[in-house]
Image 1 (tube, each protein chain N blue to C red):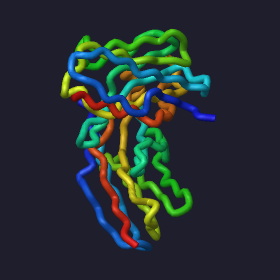
Image 2 (tube, rainbow over the protein chains, first blue to last red):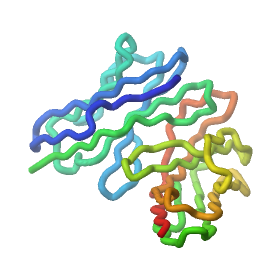
Image 3 (tube, one colour):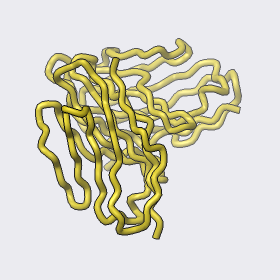
Image 4 (cartoon, rainbow over the protein chains, first blue to last red):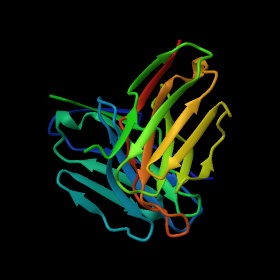
Length: 115
Length: 117
């Protein structure tokens, strides 16, 4: 079975703090893809990053960074020096190459950044 | 230039009615999807079409019928609406081609908030 778990339902931080959003996934496939999406209060879903199962390099994009570890089946997301505009629901998702491409989403983590 | 658009953005209707939600993408993508987001924000795939062909049909009541007139459009028709159908429905598209790797990111429309009274 394929599953994505985001154990943190809600996180609240003060602006400029660093925050890490956890994501743990389950799959038996050897080829798979992991994603993060952001859903701000306005409601749209914004793509942030894709990582395939053969690429364990960490990625940094501005204040955002991602840590992919196959040994622990985790794909964690860190926001450095958080800002109020980072307040949103963040979803981790899994897509396996053999299942016709559907995204399996985690439950989402609501991040509130207070000024 | 909206990449994935949906109409309407809001839909309020009575139980038992039939309604449709339209989706269009101008990204030239081959695959389109419908997802449902419930009141707890949980997102779940409903359907997927690749080049007008149905490839995913999750356990969705047959009151829901997707239709893809061409690969740029995927509409969702819902018959005999029930209270439990109230949710936000998202359309998405990706470049994925069946049989050629399915790892591409999906781009989502703005969502349609359906409220059934």
